[in-house]
Structure formats: C-alpha cells, structure tokens
Image (cartoon, rainbow, N blue to C red; front, side, top):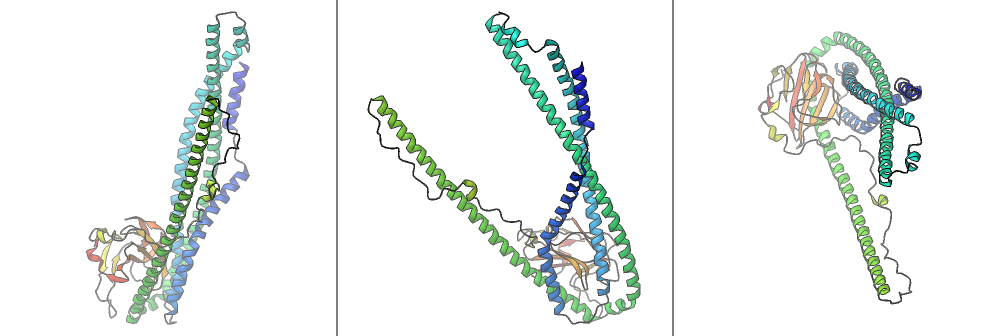
Length: 475
C-alpha cells in the first residue's frame, strides 16, 4: 500500500540520514577541554601549596649546585609524558568500551524498530481498508446498544494501542539519533586522543635523548657526588623537612575539612528544624480549619444560623520562606586536599602483611651504612627500568614531584600519621590528592635524581620518623 511504503521510506531516512553538525562536534571538543581545565583548576590550590613547601626547603639549604639538578627538568618531563600516555591509553579503552555498548544498543533498537514497523504497517493497512467511518456506521446500525457499547470500547482499546505503538516507535527513533550523535562524538574523542598520544610520544623520545646526553656529560660529577657523605646527610635532612611540612599541611587540611563538614551538618540540621516547624504549623492550621468546618456543618444541621464573623486566618509562622530557600546552599566543590584517605589504625593493623612495592632484589637495607656516609633510612630495591611501582596500602598521594636526591618522588599518606615513600622513579603515574588502592600502580622504577642503578628507594615513616620496613612488608 502507498501508506506503508511511505512509512518504510520515512523510517529508513530516520535511521540512515542522521548526521552530526559541525557545531555539535565543536561543542563536544570544548566540553572535553573544559573538563580537563576544570580538573587542573581544582588541583591548582594544592600544587601551589606544595611548590611553596619546595621553595621553603630550598631556602634552608646552601646554594651549592647539585649535578642531578641539571637532570630535573628532563626527568620531570619524561615522567609527565609517560603519565599522560598512560592516562590517554585508559581513556582510549573507556571510549572504545562506550562505543561497543552503543553498538549493542543500536542493534537491539534496530531489531525492535523492525518489529514495530511491521506492527504499525499492519494496523495502518487495516485502518485504510476499513475506512474512517467505523464508529458512525456502528452507531447507526440499529444493533443492540450493549453490543454497540462493547464494540466502541474495543475500538478505543485499538486506538490506544496504536498511539502507544507510535509513541514507542518515536522514542526508539529518537534514541537511535541520539546514539548516532554519541558515536560521532566518541570517534572525534578517539581522534583527539590519538593526536595527543602522538604528541606525547614525540615529546618522550626527545626528552629521553636529552637526558641521555646530559648523563653522559655529568657522569663523572655524579659519581663524585655519590661518594660525598655530607651530600647524603643533606638528602636525609631534605626528606625529613619535607615530611614535617607535609604532615603539618595534612593536619591543617584535615581540621579545615572537619570544620567544613560540621558547618554543613549544622546548616542541614537548621533547615530540617525549620521545615519541621512549618510542617507542624501547617498541620495545626489544617486541624483548626477542619474543626471549624465540622462545627459549621453541625450548626447547619441543627438549623442554627451560622456565625457571621469572618473566619479567623490560620496562625502565621515566624518564617514562611519557600522550602527551597531554607536548604543549605551548596558549597563550591572543595579543592584537592591532602586529608588522610584511611582511618587511623588501619595501616598499623597491616603490619607484616603489606605487599612489596616493586618486583626486584633488595640491594640495601634499613640501618646499613651508605659508604662513608649516614645509614640508610629505607631500602633500595633493584628493579628493571619501567617496572611497576605499587602502593603498599590504601591511602592518598600527598607528594608527586621531582626532588633533589630522590628524583621523581611520590609519598602516600595512609592515615594515623603513617607515610610510605617511593623515590628514584622513572615516571610518576599519580598526582597529589589522588586516592590509591593497595597494589595499584603509582609509578615506574628508574634511576632519576642521579642514582647509579635502576630501582626503587622505599621508606616507611611514622610521625616523621623512618622505621625498618622489613617487619612490615613481605619482600
């Protein structure tokens, strides 16, 4: 029939003729950039605080240049490029998964639409053959009124079924169009990710070549500095200074967060109390009105003349703002903080059960002598360059940056004033403020900071004091 052919053509056009406008693509790109910019803005506060700590530590040292400082910029850039590549790979996997989910939904919708097209075509064909006078003919047929009523009711059911089918078909077609938009957006995102990956790989290769050249030029100076006892002592003092300042900042932020939560709880309690008072006032007013109406009905029933005095207005509540006005205002999202990510006592309960931070062999143990210098305050674990460094327990990253003597350094707060420290990394995969799970990759092993061997320098500290990890970690 002409109608069914027209319907099929319309559906085909709806399914195949949908394209995303350039404006929508630009909007999607802008949204992705906006989200990245918002994340960076949120991290800006803690980044400034950590930079201030680094400057404060630098002011307490003498001005003698460390040969490893020349490597700082290059090693930091290599770390950033590797982290960016890892993040982009994760984003790429998530985007591909989203595309697969959309494709599966499109297949399901296509099958549903085929069935709905057939049903609608049959209904339209039957309606076309029967004509549009069914109800009039039935009313004028002179048949049994009960039968006419029953037939009219059945026709109503059929019309409702047709309307529901059309509504469902429209909704499915709209979803198909929305999914096609999502597919185009996801493809555009994948193109952006691929371009960023190419840029980061180019940057990584360039920085690796630059670092190799610097290492060759500085090899003799680095070797001399490794033998200097006073240098090792300064490194230890630098680490202790950093830990002390971080601990102070963590406490301050934890106290600030407690005050913020207390203020929010107080605001919620006040709003709930005010809402309860208004509800009681409304209930009292409704009860008084019902009582007045009851008395009026009784007077009317008994023939008494109703009182002519005006009906008293319900009592007013002291404050009658709209409910929306009394809700505590939603505070802006807090900046990234360094408040502990685990309750006090959680880390201490894991003694002897912590997993090794990296696969390798222990080359230096806590308390052993470092040549002619001080004793080791942690452990050095030999490991292949690029080997995954994992968090030994749940916590929050409180430091993730290059530091003289320790190269690319990451520090995790486990609550209860326990810290784990990971140094000489090739790359840092987490940023300050990130939450980490036990065994989660946080860095990759290397020899940054002028270290001679590839591996990981690992420390555990409690209340600022280093202690032997051997009885805590299963190496």
